[in-house]
Image 1 (cartoon, helix red, strand yellow):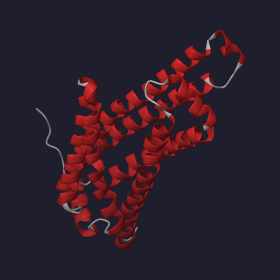
Image 2 (cartoon, helix red, strand yellow):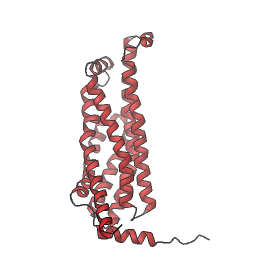
Image 3 (cartoon, helix red, strand yellow):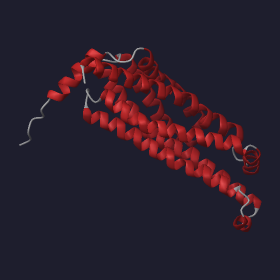
Image 4 (cartoon, helix red, strand yellow):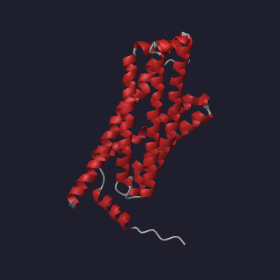
Length: 248
């Protein structure tokens, strides 16, 4: 592969990464915020169950949105590793695996929504439950789904923290983008730990979570500007020529 082809390849990787993150930025608010806020009424099991039955297509569309998000996340785990491994292969792996761990949790979390739909399916074997019991179980699974969001938020917070450091040290993406990613990581970590430790202050920590929107700086930069290819190549050569000292 010629130097020009390599340059085009890494720029293409950068821009695809930016596009994929922005696609998720459009889908995620719909599936993770709009659909739940439209159908789920906190503490009202019967109303919530009836809303889902009446708008099952919307509920399933939200599930499909979640599925698209976690599939994109798998690809992003690899693309971000490729972009940032010249800075530190070890830390790039930490960032990649923490994002992948988040993705696995997101995928399994979809089961809670499938369980809710099964309970509302009207299957004959469910007649052993009273309607109020079924509705309570539905709300339980929906609440579990929301709680699991706090768990993958911890993993994502770790990812953004390491990613922000790598971007800041890279030299081929502006340091300010790395700083904004670190700020976003702290928002996720504070929100998740805060809700775990102080569940009665959920609204306060939700406001903190909204500040994580600054993470959008990375995909916008990658899409519009890409990376400084010359600096990326320089870091890649330095990384390739680095030989660790033997221990002992």
